[in-house]
Amino acid sequence: MEQLPLILGTGGAVLLVAVIAVRVSIRVGLPSLLLYLGMGVLLGEAGFGIQYDNPELTQSLGLAALVMILSEGGLTTRWTAVKPSLGIGIALSTVAVAVSIAVTGAALHWLLGLDWRMALLWGAVLASTDAAAVFSVLRSAGIGKRLVGALEIESGINDAPAYIAVVVLAEGATVDWSLPLLVVYELAAGLVIGLAFGWGGAQALRRAALPATGLYPLATVAVCVVAYSSGQLAHASGLLATYVAALVLGNSKLPHRSDTLSFAEGLGWLAQIGLFVLLGLFASPGRIFESLVQGLVAGAVVLLLARPLSVLLSALPFKIPWREQVFLSWAGLRGAVPIVLALIPLSSGVPGAQGLVDAVFVLVIVLTLLQGATLTPLARVLGLAQHAEAHEIDVDSAPLDEMGAELLQVRINTGSKMHGVYLAELRLPVGATISLLVRDGAGFTPNKNTRLQERDQLLVVTTAEARDAAERRLRAVDRAGRLARWKGESGQ
Image 1 (cartoon, one colour):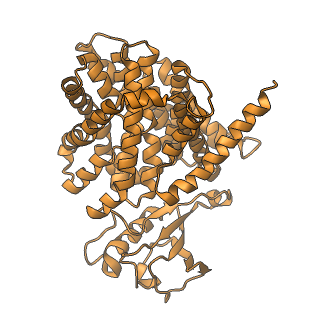
Image 2: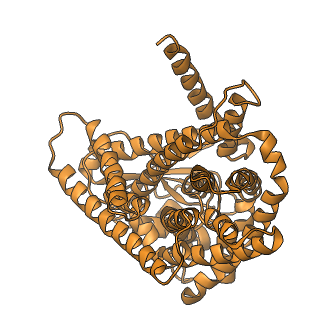
Image 3: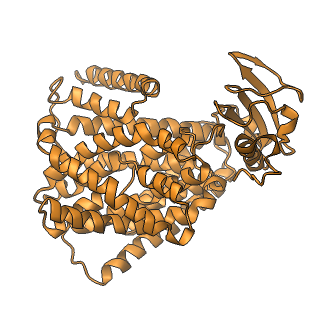
């Protein structure tokens, strides 16, 4: 009990610094997860001297944090936004994982002299993209919704097959004809369990008369956690069940939905912060430097060979343009998930697993710096960046839920074809209107003769039914100007 004030004070200080670090990372363009890792390293043996070396506990806490991150990702994902990308997203989260494991394993077997099982284990650990990185980076990067939707689906689902592959290889299970059937069962059962809990939870929450508004967000997240637990107990994919349940819940007409989404976002940030600080605390700088070469080699294989080839094969049935394939290849963001997966063989006592964990730390840091800093410029070079994209903003007022209304914030960036368009020429659908325009720091209510300019910010009020049509119209005018419809631009 004497240590409790110190523990709570340290935890609160770390959380406060981490929250401030989010703002700093946005200003300097440095991914916040690296700052969190750095905070953990600073607290650890190389800094303040906190000794922490427990891979089993780190793995368990890491999986718990991943459940929270997937819950937040599913709850805040709009089904209408990702539905057009469902096919390519599923292909990236299944076919691409298998291809990436095979290609990475074969390359590292040849380049690093690893035995086949260990080489494939490296491939399985590195096959999964990171949900936290994708949700936090891509949603604010100004990329088209089709690509963001595909990458969100991939990052939300591909943890499941990658986790299964890591467990099978770490336990030394016999690889025979029954393995594909096992994988199919675990994914199919996880999908069914997620759908059942998502639908059942939505029905129960709509009928429940809870005594306090704040209980609805807690109950919603609890449904996602129980979905994970049920999936694992059924020897299915609990991670997939979590994401699917959250996706169904997030797209249902939940009571106090805005409060639930705000709570889920805060919980997701807390999970990310805690996870990366914990992983930084677990890391040993001395060992990481010893694994520098292996990490760089593995990173080069994943980034330049395995990821592009897996995207190419996954995209073949969908006729994805080459520019989008290039972006999808480069946007396979790695974060905490590969590190958590690497802890599984370490906890199981697999020989050489410590070197894998240390190399993955190197890889995550290098790839996060490289990919995070170049994603938006690459999208501009490829002509995939959107100048003015509608973003849902957090609103804590419950009456909006009762009215079926939503708020969208639109920023008109330099180069947008919206510049010079009169408000009347936007021709937003019935049910959507621009209620506020902010220009040079001053806000005013626009009228039909107001002419839009670069760097304007618009607040759009829309009914839930008109939202998708409003977003499509805004994107169309952004790309092609006032004559977007005549030019065949639909805003998809």
